[in-house]
Amino acid sequence: MAGEATVASEARPSFLARNSFLLRRLHSLSGLVPVGAYMVVHLLTNASVLNGVASFQKNVDMIHSLGRALPVVEWVFIFIPLIFHAGYGFVRIYDSQANAAEYPYPKNIRYTLQRISGMVAFVYILFHVAQLHHLGFGQFDAEHATSSAARAIGSGFWMQAWYVVGVLACVYHLANGIWTSGITWGIWTSPAAQRRADYVCWGFGFLVAVIGMSALFGFGTVDVEKARAQEDRMQKARIEQAGEIEEAEAPAAEATKAP
Image 1 (tube, one colour):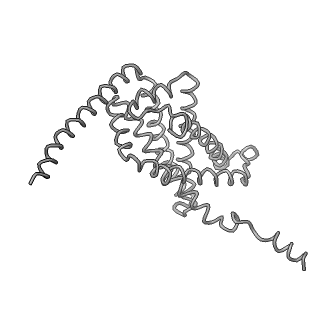
Image 2: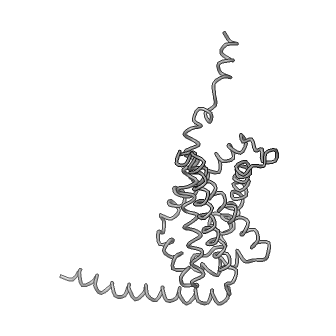
Image 3: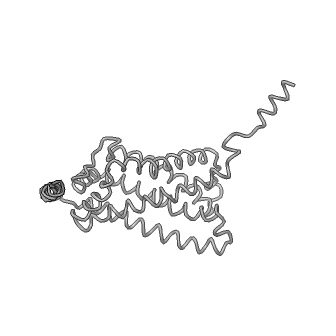
């Protein structure tokens, strides 16, 4: 009897195996929304630096206008889905059987590159958060958005090269992930549909890569000292405007209290 119980317990599949179908679809979905969608919005926001210091600062101010709700939004819609996607992604990498070396067919190569790009993207995102986010070293200053980001990203050739590699890894992982998600969700299953999806996903990836590289180019060409001076003037103007609004509201408040 004891031997039968042991055999039965050993034959029982693990939690991951029992819930593989659900976990794979949650993994696929989290990679698209919100993680992938956030990455695109993040790169678009960063690319606004090409329009000048004021444009990028305005976008950053809009994000930080959430105030105390910002950390909640970050954790619920970015960090927790990202942690799940990366964690289960490493489980899948551990269980994967890459054979691109033995059978160098396009799908096998993409299968391997998807996992390599995922690992590179994970390390890059950890570094990026540690370098710029307030959870890490906090080199990014929301009140001096352009100058602080440019100083952090553009600090030497190797840092710039690392950002190029990291962004491109993220873009490839997302674009190719969209293609594989279409198969996972049964959107394109026939060879003809998959070929059409190839064009769409590669076109999307190329567009997002251009946006990402444009953002890095924009930060790389910023004159940090001039940008900081302009940000100081903008910050002073905001403080003066806020003071004028408070002074204007004070008489109005007193008037409402008067009998």
